[in-house]
Image 1 (cartoon, helix red, strand yellow):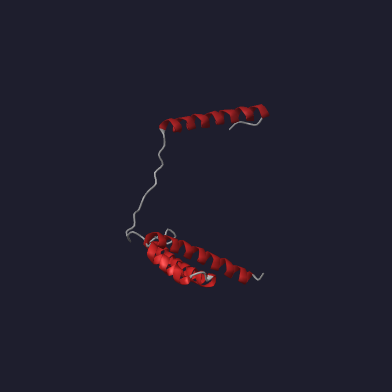
Image 2 (cartoon, rainbow, N blue to C red):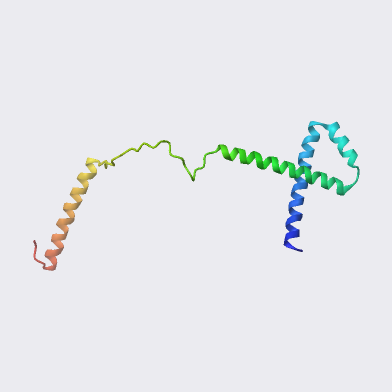
Length: 127
């Protein structure tokens, strides 16, 4: 089977299904009008398929327009517009906990002492 033919068949099937769904919803709203319209078609399957496909095309177009209109109302997160041209200068200042700073100083002193002891054991002269 040709891939183009397969794609067209799938697309037509989708549109016929969409048209059938839209027609069913319409039939629930207006049973007499739908009954009269489908009685006119009768048992002609080709005509019914064409009718449902055209209804599906129209429904697909309406849905696409609805989605497009909704998408224009949503701001684009990938292309943000600046809120204003004003710039704000900020300075980052580190927040240091005094107890953490004290622990760091004690550990540094302990490392220096250990280093001196290691150097003494190896026989290196001390500074």
